[in-house]
Length: 119
Image (tube, rainbow, N blue to C red; front, side, top):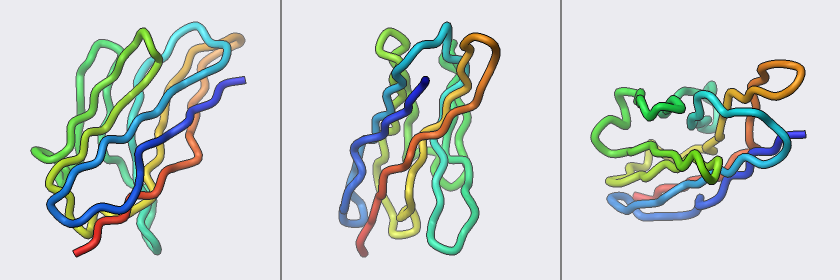
């Protein structure tokens, strides 16, 4: 079984910073792309940022220049550094990973971590 466990959420004032972490554990061969998504109340889940195993990144326009995604392949961990936070960044943030394990390739989600940005 594979688990993704997020940490680092919390309450922060507008303009502040938070760093999210997501560690993958369990039995698997390799992790391909990893990413962060978020879902605000009443909204659909949306892409925040993704990163390939080689380090190529992709960001939603709303977070470009403020958020940075990174990963440590040795630790099977992906990070999201969030700076200049805005109230509209308030959401539950979910980790996602595309994982290769026997017998094939499966997409996994974490349970989410709440980020609240006060004005």
